[in-house]
Image 1 (cartoon, one colour):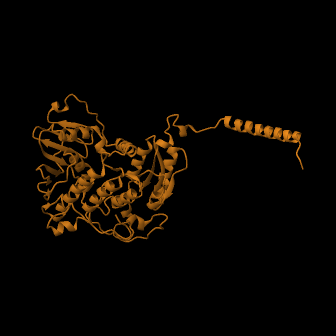
Image 2 (cartoon, helix red, strand yellow):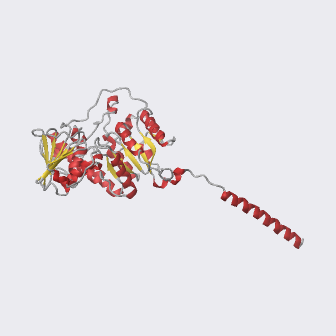
Image 3 (tube, one colour):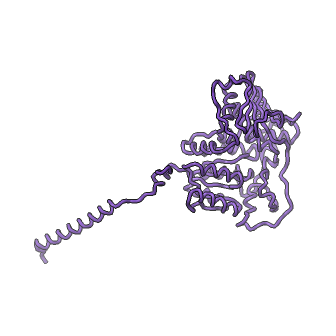
Length: 433
Protein backbone atom coordinates (compact mmCIF):
# COMPACT_ATOMS: atom_id res chain seq x y z
CA UNK A 1 0.00 0.00 0.00
CA UNK A 2 1.44 3.39 -0.99
CA UNK A 3 2.42 5.82 1.74
CA UNK A 4 1.24 9.43 1.42
CA UNK A 5 3.67 12.37 1.67
CA UNK A 6 1.77 13.67 4.72
CA UNK A 7 2.24 10.39 6.53
CA UNK A 8 5.91 10.48 5.76
CA UNK A 9 6.13 14.05 7.09
CA UNK A 10 4.26 13.13 10.26
CA UNK A 11 6.51 10.11 10.84
CA UNK A 12 9.65 12.19 10.30
CA UNK A 13 8.25 14.87 12.64
CA UNK A 14 7.60 12.31 15.36
CA UNK A 15 11.04 10.79 14.92
CA UNK A 16 12.64 14.20 15.21
CA UNK A 17 10.54 14.98 18.30
CA UNK A 18 11.48 11.72 19.96
CA UNK A 19 15.10 12.28 19.04
CA UNK A 20 15.11 15.78 20.51
CA UNK A 21 13.49 14.54 23.73
CA UNK A 22 16.09 11.83 24.05
CA UNK A 23 18.90 14.25 23.34
CA UNK A 24 17.67 16.74 25.92
CA UNK A 25 17.35 13.98 28.52
CA UNK A 26 20.87 12.78 27.78
CA UNK A 27 22.20 16.32 27.97
CA UNK A 28 20.52 16.81 31.32
CA UNK A 29 22.09 13.60 32.60
CA UNK A 30 25.53 14.73 31.47
CA UNK A 31 25.01 18.18 32.94
CA UNK A 32 23.97 16.78 36.34
CA UNK A 33 26.80 17.04 38.89
CA UNK A 34 28.80 13.86 39.61
CA UNK A 35 29.99 13.59 43.21
CA UNK A 36 33.60 12.30 43.38
CA UNK A 37 35.19 11.72 46.78
CA UNK A 38 37.98 14.16 47.59
CA UNK A 39 40.25 11.21 48.36
CA UNK A 40 39.92 10.02 44.75
CA UNK A 41 41.20 13.37 43.50
CA UNK A 42 43.95 13.85 46.04
CA UNK A 43 42.18 16.80 47.68
CA UNK A 44 42.04 17.79 51.34
CA UNK A 45 45.54 16.48 51.97
CA UNK A 46 44.82 12.98 50.64
CA UNK A 47 46.82 11.13 47.98
CA UNK A 48 45.01 9.94 44.83
CA UNK A 49 44.85 6.16 44.30
CA UNK A 50 47.28 6.31 41.37
CA UNK A 51 50.03 7.53 43.70
CA UNK A 52 49.34 5.23 46.65
CA UNK A 53 51.40 2.19 47.59
CA UNK A 54 49.13 -0.70 48.56
CA UNK A 55 50.81 -2.67 51.36
CA UNK A 56 50.17 -6.03 53.01
CA UNK A 57 51.69 -7.25 56.27
CA UNK A 58 53.11 -10.72 56.99
CA UNK A 59 53.68 -11.71 60.63
CA UNK A 60 52.84 -8.52 62.50
CA UNK A 61 53.89 -8.99 66.13
CA UNK A 62 55.50 -6.53 68.53
CA UNK A 63 58.14 -5.16 66.19
CA UNK A 64 55.83 -5.48 63.21
CA UNK A 65 53.16 -3.42 64.96
CA UNK A 66 55.68 -0.63 65.41
CA UNK A 67 56.67 -0.86 61.74
CA UNK A 68 53.00 -0.85 60.75
CA UNK A 69 52.56 2.42 62.63
CA UNK A 70 55.40 3.94 60.62
CA UNK A 71 53.76 2.82 57.39
CA UNK A 72 50.33 4.11 58.39
CA UNK A 73 51.85 7.53 59.14
CA UNK A 74 52.65 7.91 55.44
CA UNK A 75 49.82 9.59 53.51
CA UNK A 76 50.45 7.55 50.35
CA UNK A 77 50.12 4.13 52.04
CA UNK A 78 47.01 2.00 51.84
CA UNK A 79 47.29 -1.01 54.15
CA UNK A 80 45.10 -3.64 52.55
CA UNK A 81 45.72 -6.97 54.26
CA UNK A 82 47.38 -8.74 57.17
CA UNK A 83 48.59 -12.32 57.43
CA UNK A 84 49.54 -13.95 60.71
CA UNK A 85 49.49 -17.48 62.11
CA UNK A 86 47.79 -16.13 65.25
CA UNK A 87 44.11 -15.22 65.07
CA UNK A 88 44.43 -12.67 67.88
CA UNK A 89 47.13 -10.81 65.98
CA UNK A 90 45.18 -10.83 62.74
CA UNK A 91 42.20 -9.27 64.48
CA UNK A 92 44.32 -6.73 66.38
CA UNK A 93 46.20 -5.56 63.28
CA UNK A 94 42.99 -5.28 61.27
CA UNK A 95 41.54 -3.03 63.95
CA UNK A 96 44.65 -0.81 63.96
CA UNK A 97 44.57 -0.45 60.18
CA UNK A 98 40.81 0.02 59.89
CA UNK A 99 40.72 2.60 62.69
CA UNK A 100 43.56 4.57 61.12
CA UNK A 101 42.17 4.38 57.60
CA UNK A 102 38.56 4.90 58.75
CA UNK A 103 37.18 1.89 56.89
CA UNK A 104 36.80 -1.86 57.32
CA UNK A 105 38.80 -2.87 54.27
CA UNK A 106 41.82 -4.63 55.79
CA UNK A 107 41.54 -8.32 54.89
CA UNK A 108 42.90 -11.14 57.08
CA UNK A 109 44.79 -14.27 55.99
CA UNK A 110 46.42 -17.20 57.75
CA UNK A 111 48.52 -18.31 54.76
CA UNK A 112 50.79 -15.58 53.39
CA UNK A 113 50.60 -17.07 49.89
CA UNK A 114 46.96 -16.00 49.66
CA UNK A 115 47.98 -12.44 50.46
CA UNK A 116 50.73 -12.56 47.83
CA UNK A 117 48.22 -13.75 45.23
CA UNK A 118 46.41 -10.42 45.40
CA UNK A 119 47.21 -8.37 42.31
CA UNK A 120 46.37 -5.05 43.97
CA UNK A 121 49.14 -5.32 46.60
CA UNK A 122 52.36 -3.55 45.61
CA UNK A 123 54.57 -4.23 48.62
CA UNK A 124 54.71 -6.24 51.82
CA UNK A 125 56.02 -5.66 55.31
CA UNK A 126 57.66 -8.89 56.51
CA UNK A 127 57.98 -8.86 60.29
CA UNK A 128 57.74 -12.55 61.15
CA UNK A 129 60.28 -14.27 63.37
CA UNK A 130 63.75 -14.66 61.79
CA UNK A 131 62.95 -18.25 60.82
CA UNK A 132 60.61 -16.97 58.10
CA UNK A 133 62.28 -13.78 56.86
CA UNK A 134 64.27 -15.10 53.89
CA UNK A 135 61.66 -17.63 52.77
CA UNK A 136 58.81 -15.10 52.87
CA UNK A 137 60.97 -12.54 51.06
CA UNK A 138 61.75 -14.96 48.25
CA UNK A 139 58.08 -15.86 47.82
CA UNK A 140 57.19 -12.15 47.78
CA UNK A 141 59.80 -11.35 45.15
CA UNK A 142 58.60 -14.17 42.91
CA UNK A 143 55.04 -12.87 43.33
CA UNK A 144 56.17 -9.47 42.04
CA UNK A 145 56.02 -7.63 45.37
CA UNK A 146 58.53 -5.17 46.79
CA UNK A 147 59.35 -5.73 50.44
CA UNK A 148 60.44 -4.16 53.70
CA UNK A 149 61.92 -7.08 55.64
CA UNK A 150 62.83 -7.05 59.31
CA UNK A 151 66.16 -8.39 60.40
CA UNK A 152 68.01 -10.64 60.74
CA UNK A 153 67.00 -11.18 57.12
CA UNK A 154 68.69 -14.56 56.71
CA UNK A 155 69.55 -17.61 58.79
CA UNK A 156 72.85 -18.49 57.12
CA UNK A 157 75.35 -17.58 54.42
CA UNK A 158 73.61 -19.48 51.64
CA UNK A 159 70.31 -17.71 52.29
CA UNK A 160 72.10 -14.36 52.20
CA UNK A 161 73.45 -15.09 48.72
CA UNK A 162 70.10 -16.42 47.47
CA UNK A 163 68.36 -13.31 48.79
CA UNK A 164 70.77 -11.03 46.94
CA UNK A 165 70.56 -13.01 43.70
CA UNK A 166 66.76 -13.23 43.80
CA UNK A 167 66.41 -9.46 44.12
CA UNK A 168 68.89 -8.93 41.31
CA UNK A 169 67.00 -11.32 39.05
CA UNK A 170 63.48 -10.14 39.83
CA UNK A 171 64.26 -6.42 40.08
CA UNK A 172 62.25 -6.05 43.28
CA UNK A 173 62.86 -3.26 45.78
CA UNK A 174 64.16 -4.77 49.03
CA UNK A 175 64.72 -2.81 52.21
CA UNK A 176 66.23 -4.59 55.22
CA UNK A 177 64.97 -3.24 58.54
CA UNK A 178 68.34 -1.66 59.31
CA UNK A 179 66.75 1.73 59.96
CA UNK A 180 69.90 3.36 61.33
CA UNK A 181 71.08 3.85 57.74
CA UNK A 182 68.50 6.60 57.49
CA UNK A 183 69.44 8.45 60.69
CA UNK A 184 71.59 11.57 60.17
CA UNK A 185 74.30 11.05 62.80
CA UNK A 186 75.00 7.45 61.76
CA UNK A 187 74.97 8.51 58.10
CA UNK A 188 77.45 11.31 58.82
CA UNK A 189 79.79 9.00 60.74
CA UNK A 190 79.80 6.55 57.84
CA UNK A 191 80.37 9.41 55.40
CA UNK A 192 83.48 10.49 57.30
CA UNK A 193 84.89 6.99 56.94
CA UNK A 194 83.89 6.43 53.30
CA UNK A 195 85.13 9.75 52.00
CA UNK A 196 88.60 9.58 53.56
CA UNK A 197 88.03 12.34 56.12
CA UNK A 198 89.38 9.97 58.79
CA UNK A 199 92.37 9.07 56.65
CA UNK A 200 93.14 5.53 55.60
CA UNK A 201 90.80 3.23 57.53
CA UNK A 202 92.33 0.91 60.12
CA UNK A 203 89.43 -0.51 62.17
CA UNK A 204 85.66 -0.45 62.38
CA UNK A 205 84.01 -1.55 65.63
CA UNK A 206 80.61 -3.19 66.12
CA UNK A 207 78.74 -4.02 69.31
CA UNK A 208 77.49 -7.65 69.31
CA UNK A 209 75.40 -7.43 72.51
CA UNK A 210 76.62 -10.85 73.58
CA UNK A 211 78.97 -13.42 72.07
CA UNK A 212 77.70 -16.95 72.51
CA UNK A 213 76.87 -19.70 70.03
CA UNK A 214 73.76 -21.73 70.79
CA UNK A 215 71.58 -24.23 68.97
CA UNK A 216 67.81 -24.31 68.72
CA UNK A 217 66.33 -26.84 71.11
CA UNK A 218 63.01 -28.47 71.94
CA UNK A 219 60.72 -27.71 74.84
CA UNK A 220 58.28 -30.08 76.50
CA UNK A 221 55.23 -30.83 74.31
CA UNK A 222 52.00 -29.00 75.10
CA UNK A 223 48.50 -29.33 73.67
CA UNK A 224 48.54 -27.85 70.20
CA UNK A 225 45.81 -25.21 69.58
CA UNK A 226 43.34 -25.39 66.73
CA UNK A 227 45.01 -24.14 63.55
CA UNK A 228 42.45 -21.35 63.20
CA UNK A 229 43.67 -19.95 66.52
CA UNK A 230 47.41 -20.66 66.16
CA UNK A 231 48.67 -22.42 63.04
CA UNK A 232 51.67 -24.21 64.55
CA UNK A 233 52.62 -25.98 61.32
CA UNK A 234 52.71 -22.65 59.45
CA UNK A 235 54.59 -21.04 62.32
CA UNK A 236 57.34 -23.67 62.00
CA UNK A 237 57.34 -23.27 58.23
CA UNK A 238 60.81 -24.13 56.88
CA UNK A 239 62.21 -24.95 60.34
CA UNK A 240 62.66 -28.50 61.55
CA UNK A 241 59.50 -29.91 63.11
CA UNK A 242 59.15 -29.90 66.87
CA UNK A 243 56.17 -30.28 69.22
CA UNK A 244 54.12 -27.26 70.16
CA UNK A 245 55.17 -25.22 73.17
CA UNK A 246 53.72 -21.77 73.83
CA UNK A 247 57.11 -20.36 74.87
CA UNK A 248 58.41 -20.90 71.33
CA UNK A 249 55.67 -18.75 69.79
CA UNK A 250 57.31 -15.50 70.80
CA UNK A 251 60.89 -16.73 70.90
CA UNK A 252 62.70 -14.06 68.92
CA UNK A 253 65.82 -16.23 68.56
CA UNK A 254 63.92 -19.29 67.36
CA UNK A 255 65.76 -21.20 64.61
CA UNK A 256 68.24 -18.50 63.71
CA UNK A 257 71.49 -18.91 61.85
CA UNK A 258 72.26 -22.34 60.44
CA UNK A 259 71.04 -24.00 63.61
CA UNK A 260 73.09 -21.47 65.58
CA UNK A 261 71.21 -18.82 67.48
CA UNK A 262 74.45 -16.96 67.98
CA UNK A 263 73.41 -14.59 70.74
CA UNK A 264 73.78 -10.95 69.77
CA UNK A 265 76.36 -11.50 67.03
CA UNK A 266 73.58 -11.82 64.49
CA UNK A 267 70.90 -9.77 66.25
CA UNK A 268 72.81 -6.55 66.96
CA UNK A 269 75.21 -7.39 64.17
CA UNK A 270 72.37 -6.93 61.72
CA UNK A 271 72.56 -3.26 62.71
CA UNK A 272 76.07 -2.56 63.96
CA UNK A 273 77.95 -4.64 61.41
CA UNK A 274 75.68 -3.21 58.72
CA UNK A 275 76.86 0.29 59.68
CA UNK A 276 80.48 -0.88 59.67
CA UNK A 277 79.93 -2.29 56.20
CA UNK A 278 78.53 1.06 55.10
CA UNK A 279 81.60 2.79 56.55
CA UNK A 280 83.86 0.67 54.32
CA UNK A 281 81.67 1.49 51.30
CA UNK A 282 79.60 -1.69 51.37
CA UNK A 283 82.51 -3.77 50.13
CA UNK A 284 82.60 -7.57 50.21
CA UNK A 285 82.61 -9.03 53.75
CA UNK A 286 85.81 -9.85 55.68
CA UNK A 287 87.81 -12.89 54.62
CA UNK A 288 89.24 -14.02 57.98
CA UNK A 289 87.53 -14.39 61.36
CA UNK A 290 89.25 -15.16 64.66
CA UNK A 291 87.46 -16.57 67.72
CA UNK A 292 86.99 -14.21 70.70
CA UNK A 293 90.07 -13.15 72.63
CA UNK A 294 90.13 -10.64 75.49
CA UNK A 295 86.47 -9.85 74.88
CA UNK A 296 86.90 -9.11 71.17
CA UNK A 297 86.26 -11.06 67.99
CA UNK A 298 88.39 -9.71 65.13
CA UNK A 299 87.71 -10.14 61.42
CA UNK A 300 89.85 -8.82 58.58
CA UNK A 301 88.92 -7.52 55.15
CA UNK A 302 91.15 -8.40 52.21
CA UNK A 303 92.62 -4.87 52.31
CA UNK A 304 93.74 -5.33 55.92
CA UNK A 305 91.04 -3.22 57.63
CA UNK A 306 89.80 -4.92 60.79
CA UNK A 307 86.18 -5.42 61.83
CA UNK A 308 86.17 -5.72 65.61
CA UNK A 309 83.22 -7.11 67.59
CA UNK A 310 83.51 -5.89 71.18
CA UNK A 311 81.11 -5.67 74.08
CA UNK A 312 82.91 -3.20 76.36
CA UNK A 313 85.02 -0.07 76.10
CA UNK A 314 82.35 2.10 74.48
CA UNK A 315 81.70 5.78 75.06
CA UNK A 316 78.21 5.92 76.64
CA UNK A 317 76.23 6.99 73.58
CA UNK A 318 73.32 4.58 73.82
CA UNK A 319 72.66 1.15 72.35
CA UNK A 320 74.04 -0.12 69.03
CA UNK A 321 77.33 1.81 69.20
CA UNK A 322 79.82 1.84 66.34
CA UNK A 323 83.29 3.32 66.04
CA UNK A 324 85.37 4.00 62.94
CA UNK A 325 89.12 4.61 63.20
CA UNK A 326 91.40 5.93 60.49
CA UNK A 327 95.00 7.14 60.44
CA UNK A 328 93.82 10.76 60.71
CA UNK A 329 90.96 10.50 63.21
CA UNK A 330 88.01 8.60 64.58
CA UNK A 331 84.28 8.92 65.20
CA UNK A 332 81.90 7.06 67.51
CA UNK A 333 78.08 7.08 67.47
CA UNK A 334 75.16 5.39 69.21
CA UNK A 335 71.39 5.41 69.53
CA UNK A 336 71.37 8.59 71.63
CA UNK A 337 71.68 10.50 68.37
CA UNK A 338 75.02 11.95 69.43
CA UNK A 339 78.48 11.78 67.87
CA UNK A 340 81.91 11.97 69.48
CA UNK A 341 84.75 13.00 67.16
CA UNK A 342 88.51 12.94 67.55
CA UNK A 343 88.51 16.56 66.37
CA UNK A 344 85.74 19.17 65.97
CA UNK A 345 87.32 20.05 62.62
CA UNK A 346 85.77 16.85 61.21
CA UNK A 347 82.41 18.59 61.32
CA UNK A 348 83.70 21.17 58.81
CA UNK A 349 81.07 23.63 59.97
CA UNK A 350 78.19 21.21 59.47
CA UNK A 351 75.36 20.70 61.92
CA UNK A 352 74.25 17.08 62.29
CA UNK A 353 70.72 16.53 63.54
CA UNK A 354 70.46 14.49 66.76
CA UNK A 355 67.62 11.98 66.45
CA UNK A 356 67.72 9.45 69.25
CA UNK A 357 65.76 6.25 69.74
CA UNK A 358 66.41 4.74 66.28
CA UNK A 359 62.98 5.50 64.72
CA UNK A 360 62.10 3.63 61.52
CA UNK A 361 59.95 6.37 59.96
CA UNK A 362 62.74 7.71 57.72
CA UNK A 363 63.68 4.19 56.63
CA UNK A 364 60.08 3.38 55.71
CA UNK A 365 59.86 6.63 53.74
CA UNK A 366 63.07 5.74 51.87
CA UNK A 367 61.53 2.38 50.98
CA UNK A 368 58.26 3.87 49.72
CA UNK A 369 60.09 6.46 47.62
CA UNK A 370 62.13 3.69 46.02
CA UNK A 371 59.02 1.61 45.35
CA UNK A 372 57.85 4.54 43.24
CA UNK A 373 61.17 5.48 41.63
CA UNK A 374 62.60 1.92 41.38
CA UNK A 375 65.87 3.17 42.87
CA UNK A 376 67.85 1.13 45.40
CA UNK A 377 67.03 1.90 49.05
CA UNK A 378 69.79 2.31 51.62
CA UNK A 379 69.20 -1.11 53.18
CA UNK A 380 69.14 -2.91 49.84
CA UNK A 381 69.65 -6.64 49.33
CA UNK A 382 73.30 -6.29 48.27
CA UNK A 383 74.20 -4.41 51.44
CA UNK A 384 72.15 -6.77 53.60
CA UNK A 385 73.82 -9.79 52.04
CA UNK A 386 77.36 -8.62 52.82
CA UNK A 387 76.56 -7.52 56.39
CA UNK A 388 74.74 -10.76 57.16
CA UNK A 389 77.55 -12.92 55.74
CA UNK A 390 79.99 -11.11 58.05
CA UNK A 391 77.75 -11.91 61.03
CA UNK A 392 77.21 -15.54 60.03
CA UNK A 393 80.93 -16.13 59.43
CA UNK A 394 81.81 -14.54 62.77
CA UNK A 395 79.21 -16.77 64.39
CA UNK A 396 80.81 -19.83 62.79
CA UNK A 397 84.26 -18.87 64.14
CA UNK A 398 82.63 -18.36 67.52
CA UNK A 399 80.91 -21.74 67.39
CA UNK A 400 84.00 -23.66 66.24
CA UNK A 401 86.33 -21.78 68.57
CA UNK A 402 88.97 -21.24 65.88
CA UNK A 403 89.89 -19.04 62.93
CA UNK A 404 87.93 -19.52 59.72
CA UNK A 405 88.74 -18.10 56.29
CA UNK A 406 86.00 -17.08 53.89
CA UNK A 407 86.31 -16.70 50.11
CA UNK A 408 84.32 -13.94 48.41
CA UNK A 409 85.00 -15.66 45.09
CA UNK A 410 83.59 -19.11 45.91
CA UNK A 411 81.39 -17.92 48.80
CA UNK A 412 82.52 -20.70 51.13
CA UNK A 413 85.31 -21.69 53.51
CA UNK A 414 87.94 -23.36 51.29
CA UNK A 415 89.01 -26.80 52.49
CA UNK A 416 87.09 -26.39 55.76
CA UNK A 417 84.44 -29.12 56.02
CA UNK A 418 83.30 -28.14 59.52
CA UNK A 419 82.74 -24.49 58.65
CA UNK A 420 81.01 -25.31 55.37
CA UNK A 421 78.52 -27.53 57.19
CA UNK A 422 77.32 -24.40 58.99
CA UNK A 423 77.11 -22.40 55.78
CA UNK A 424 73.56 -23.59 55.05
CA UNK A 425 70.77 -25.81 56.35
CA UNK A 426 67.95 -27.94 55.00
CA UNK A 427 64.43 -26.54 54.82
CA UNK A 428 61.38 -28.53 55.83
CA UNK A 429 59.01 -29.60 53.06
CA UNK A 430 57.38 -28.04 51.09
CA UNK A 431 59.30 -24.78 51.49
CA UNK A 432 61.90 -23.75 48.96
CA UNK A 433 64.03 -20.67 48.32
